[in-house]
Image (cartoon, rainbow over all chains, first blue to last red; front, top):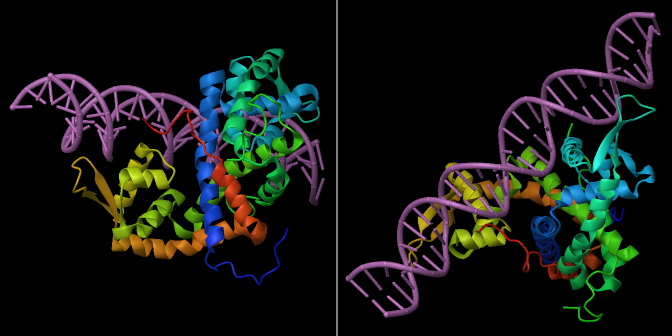
Length: 163
Length: 163
DNA sequence: AGTAAATACTTGCGTGAGCAAGTAGATGCG
DNA sequence: CGCATCTACTTGCTCACGCAAGTATTTACT
């Protein structure tokens, strides 16, 4: 945490560069998610939310994750995750399996069908991300940018994500 | 535009640093807007969407902007903007005024009440943005970060924003 | 063992936003 | 001058999501 440099005065007006950054970030936050989702829908018939869930499940050991964990890695509320998994389940891309060591826990498990779906969809996602984002950035800058974004930690002591 | 360096092969898999960047950005995009909105609602009783509209109107010459322009600067669809302005109008913070030089155009105009409301709310917004974002970043990095974000241009030839 | 509290997940409900279709006014063309 | 087209905005519809409340199961305390 690179704070504690200046005295705690949270109400200093934004400098010009701060202002510029906040607006640029706001623009990306408002427009980029839907742009990628639109690409996914049009070219792969798979919403970004479902793609993301499948992707994380496919990367998890055994292809399964607790609802909780899945929600966290997808940056979704638990109830939102429930619905995404419902949709995926109806399509046969995941199954729910009771958690062995905790009777109230459930695992979402990718099916082979789900993996196949993912396989079919990833080029679209990749192309979208490249076209909207990475094509416009200098690879040299990425580590620094990533580091900066990782320091932005929303939800620390403010409102919060489901119950 | 720092592209045209490598041949047009949009399907190269993501490198590790690209992957990291995309995930970090995804996290911020998913979580930050609601975090700030929650702060605004809790501490200023004014949603971020309405705050943003008032802010842009207050900065515009004459305190008015065409629905069109307002939607653009707020990064909102035109129909979404219609509803935000409806809400603001009901509260007396803006008025609609017919556009002189174009009979089908409407201006959203901030009222004095609206300006007062903005005046009351900006400290909350400022604190939220500082707490969630700027406190965690090195001011030295801001120009570079802003520049990078500005190069990310969503919606170029993909789906798009209302009709 | 038995009850109270915490946890894991789902469901009910409300809200905000985009798309598509509708309306009203402007522009162009014959 | 009249009709077709285009533009600016609004409204109908749908949907995804978060929050709060509900259910089931585990943990903690006595």
